[in-house]
Length: 318
Image (cartoon, rainbow, N blue to C red; front, side, top):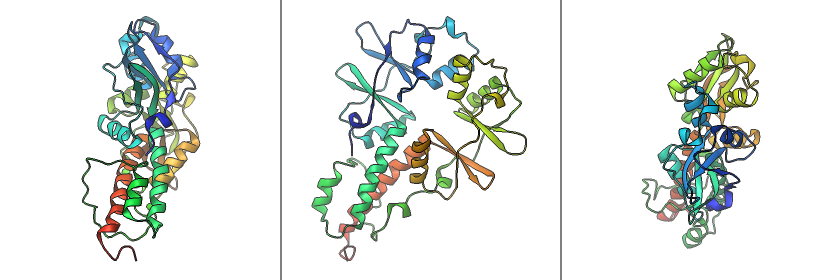
C-alpha cells in the first residue's frame, strides 16, 4: 500500500492563532485540495486545525461576526497528525475511528501536507485493482503474494474470520458492497423557498454536512456546508436568501445497485464528496466520501484475507 506521503497534498499555508478568522476562510474555500487551515505557535509547532465544518458550525450557525473572530476562536486542538511513512490503509483506519476527513502529515515538528478521505479511498481502489488481478492469477504462490501485497496492504494486528475461506477466483466487484448497503436512508430536506440560515441550522441540528432542496414534490438541488460558506463569505449573500439561490442543481445521482467502487470513481470524476442515491426519480438516500472510505477499508481487508485463504485449501488453486 502506498504511503501517505505519496498521495498527500502539500501544505501551502499555515497561520498563527491570533490572526483574523477571515484569513483562514480564503484558504478553506480556495483551490487547495487540503481545504483546511493549520495553526502553529510561536515556535512554528502545529497546535490546531480548522476545516469548513468549523466555519459552518462556529460562525454561520451561531450567527457570529467573522470580522470579530480570530483563528484561535474556531480552531480544533490538539491536532491529530500522522507520519509520512504511514500506510494509506492505516491512515484510513485512523480516519474511520476518529470520524475525520483530513489528517495533517507531520515530519519532525513540521506539517508537510494533508491527506484527505477522498485521497485515501482512491488509493485503496488502486490497491484493490492489484489484489483483484492476484485473485485471477493461478501461478502466484503465497510467498510471492506476501512480498507483493506488503507494498499495497498492511493489516498487521487485524483478525479476520475470512482467513481460510474457500474463495473461487473472482472479481472484486462481486464482493464489493452496493451503494444501497452503505448509504444513509434518512435524508434531510428543506423547501427551496426556505432561507439559507434555516437550512444551515437544520444541518447542524442533525450533524450532517448536506441537505436536499425540494420543490415540495421532488429533489431539485443540494446544499452543502461549503456551498453555504462560499455564498455568504465569497458571494456576500444574505443568510436570509432563499435556498434556491445557492443550491447545486442538477444534482449528481447514482443507482442503488452501483458498487462502492463505481461510486468512488464518480466522486473522483466530478470532484465531489457526496452522491444522491436515486432509483429513477425517487431519492433513496445519500452516500458520502466518508461512507465510501469506511466501506473501501473493509473491502480491502476482506479481499486480502480471502486471497490468503486460497492457500488454506488444496482445491482452491485448481
